[in-house]
Length: 239
Ligand code: DC
Image (cartoon, rainbow, N blue to C red):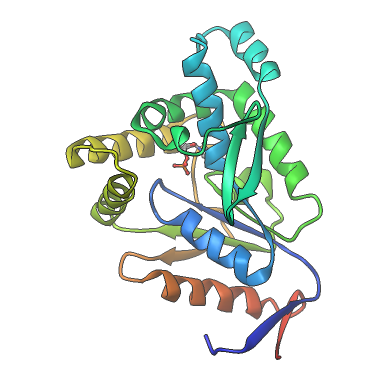
């Protein structure tokens, strides 16, 4: 990307990014939203916040009434704190807690519950109502915004994903065995792709981006080029 190129968005669009866990979806989504001056919505964080609430309140996942009631008691929103997208659950900053292994181990089971999905998808559709949004998750291009102007399906080699997750947790000071991460990712892949409600799959019209051998800048350039190629939506000019 040349320095000094300014992107003017004529008509705001929706960019949907889906893919397996730890593929770098949020890294790409954040960078894209920054470049385009779009909002960023991390839908995984929403499912994680719900999971944290369910764990802390001993919600029985098999009890429909319990689940419905809990969903009415919780509110998830995002705020920007020191330039970072931060997740709030019932007014409390839970950004760090939702990334813990305790939540990671339970989130796919919670995200497979139809009641939970319905509540989250409703909110996500509202968040994208005015377009100008980059949203990442598992069902954004298939269920939340099937008409999104740009759909990206991000992939990476399994071991690359394990290493990335390991580095991320280590950086946060969580001491964790790499084999535990391997187990967690493969279990989440299994549940995310095999659940009956909105399983993770590539939308037919999604563009596949394998970033195993790409750095953050390289993957951003590819995604930006795809965005700019949508000629009637976005134009570029030299500022
Ligand atoms: O992207 P992540 O790893 O933070 O997502 C956490 C979990 O939430 C993931 O295992 C599957 C689920 N999820 C989902 O089912 N649908 C989404 N749109 C986003 C996440």
